[in-house]
Structure formats: structure tokens, C-alpha cells
Length: 103
Image 1 (tube, rainbow, N blue to C red):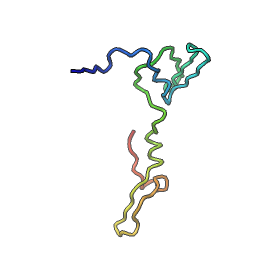
Image 2 (cartoon, rainbow, N blue to C red):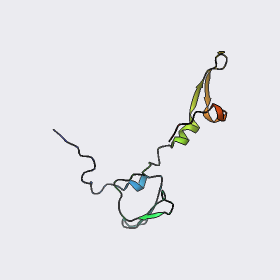
Image 3 (tube, helix red, strand yellow):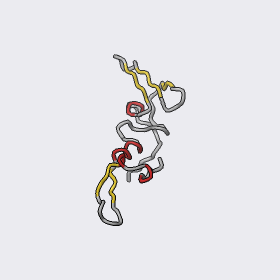
Image 4 (cartoon, helix red, strand yellow):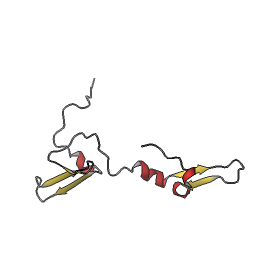
């Protein structure tokens, strides 16, 4: 039986989470040790001098935020009279017609 322990021993050689985080600014030089990483999540940008394996504020830069998903969402509209039925872009709805999700 194979047992997987979460939060156990870190695998060495894995890339830092900062390299794909939306809050990070990573500057790399010509050599492997030439790298500056700064975390922009905090009010004062903090320099990170080690490879991060776990972070409570990590947000993958390739994944859209809730706000971005709401902007591109299509809403299925229907009216009691049956005349206006179909999809509408969320940005075209009036403010009182929008249903905003909590983050």
C-alpha cells in the first residue's frame, strides 16, 4: 500500500513557487545563482532568498481571477413574458442586474 503524506519532506530540485506566482517578480541572470525574487503581495515588497515550496498567498499567474472570470462570463437571461431569452455578456448588464460572487 502506498501512503502519501502531505506537507512532508520537500523534494529538492523542484522549481520555486515564485516562478509561476502572480505576486512575484523574478529576475534571473546568466548563472543559476543569479536570481532575485521579490514578493509583491505585501505592502512592502519583500525579497525572498530561498526556493519557496509552500505559500499561503500563492496565486498561479496563468489562472484568471474571480473578477476576470466575471468580466468574460455570459449570463443566460429570460423574462417572464418570454420575449427576451438568450445569452448576454456580463459587462453589458446594468449594475442592478449583476450578481457578484464573493471572493
